[in-house]
Length: 55
Image (cartoon, rainbow, N blue to C red; front, side):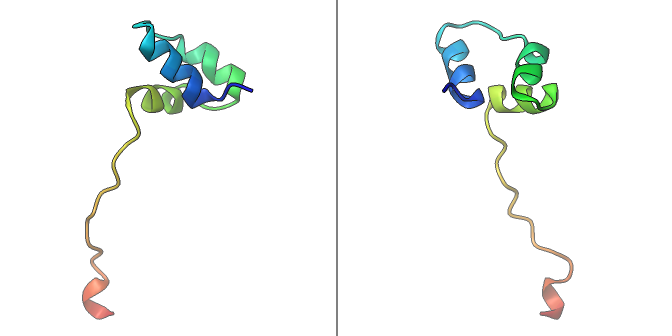
């Protein structure tokens, strides 16, 4: 079974821009999520919490 990430990798390899809305319907998620995964997974911010000074 092809997953969303593998299908996006296929599009990237073929230098094609996918239809984000169609893929979102196919995998039952939001089109912005598909677009975010197509552009690359976001990096986690390493920002300290304001509450860290109390722990």
